[in-house]
Length: 411
Image (cartoon, rainbow, N blue to C red; front, side, top):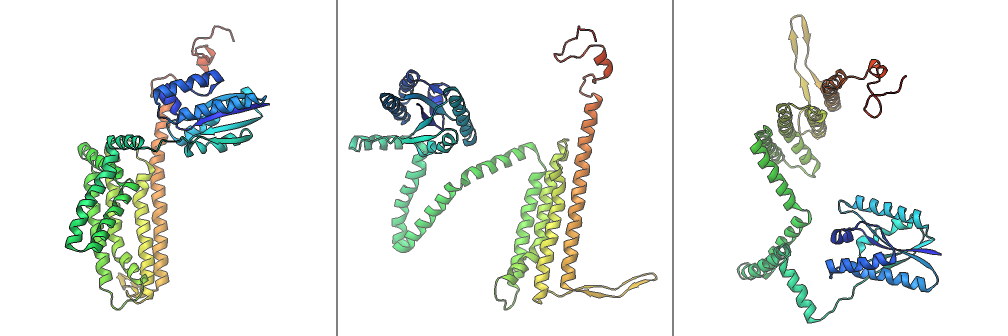
């Protein structure tokens, strides 16, 4: 009975520390690997996993079984590539040794996620989880504390907030009271945890880098983004002003619809300004313009029309705004009397207009992007790249063959 005793290493610690490629198969090879990993990093728990793999194989060998010892590692690029690398190596081992069952050795929860991959390919009889026992004495505690203090990132993340808390809390407790001071400190700590948890610092760093690159590159979108931000503030102010002018309104539907009705024209103009800046940047670069840049302004207008139409419908139903009245039209012999438009008709007009704008945007984007693509295809066919076109005459003369050389054989 052949049993595959495999040690799983999802993060490729073995390859990173020893430079070896997995899978590593065989008792002597894994035994030598223990020495290499131990010399590279004596504190790594992977050494214990490799030793446990050898111990399990030795136990199975004493029980008259035929164990195959192997070490399988993942990839450092991403979790998906790591899992695929492990699956590929397992397929090679199973195809070569054809084991009847497997014993999996792991040392972390990260490696345990690979167990279903092994189970999908061979019967798993046991999963051996290696837990390293740590000495709990003063010397070990001191050593761990020393390592913690040597890490600059951990010091800034943990010690700085704790130190500020111990400094600020006595002052707040003296000035405003212990309860208010504790509430303020708890709020600041919560905001800090959310700031680190959502990686807002990385987002801000990326935004700052993009703004700096845009300024140095002289992009038009920098100015349009500033204008869009101003229009957004105006829209928010106009919407809030419209809500404040409501009289004796109960509930939340009417204020929300009022805010949307008053602010959506300004917000739509802000989005149009920002999208126009991006479109101008693409035009200045003299590169093929993507369909998304061409279609975005039409989508913004369509969404603004839909939001404006629905908010006007609800407000007209609640008598917050007056019904829309078409004025009388007199053009020569043509005369049209004024007439009112109901709320439903008004909503239908906005929705239909939004659909028309969307279709026009799709058509415009398809026309311009399709034209660029067709022109590039025509250029390639005409041989603008400098290569000779493939013709029947060339084939008949024996000038083109699969190997790129002249063909000496007669036709």
